[in-house]
Length: 111
Length: 86
Image (cartoon, rainbow over all chains, first blue to last red):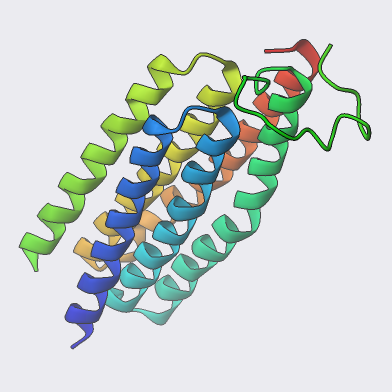
């Protein structure tokens, strides 16, 4: 029973990682690529680590695996936020696709 | 169960290749940071599946190290790009 559960979790996690990679390649803009890259891969990683934790022999290893998953959940949004700010400030994200730029009046728009 | 691991590793290999395509194509530096971050998450996923396959705990140091360094690298490069421009 445990094997079935971990197999299902891991396969869904790998499928989500594939979705993230596919979205990363196909989206036109830095910001839309960040949507595709950070969200599903973080969730996929969580599923895979929980699937691996279910199969572990000692409890301590399972807890360490869940710690890695929790750590990824905490740092994923922070890293994505920093990339987004760096992309905006350095002007790399300013393709034609952007329609509304609400950040322009708040922080310095790209020179 | 081994078939499940084979499918998992094949899927992760395809995901890593796709991310590599974006890494090479990415016009601007933030594209490359995002793809590197995703590549590192694929690596962490691969190590987690390898740990599940062997059902032993010796992979955990690698897992923590890769995910820590992945985050650190992303933050450092993001700050670098912000100062210097793309």
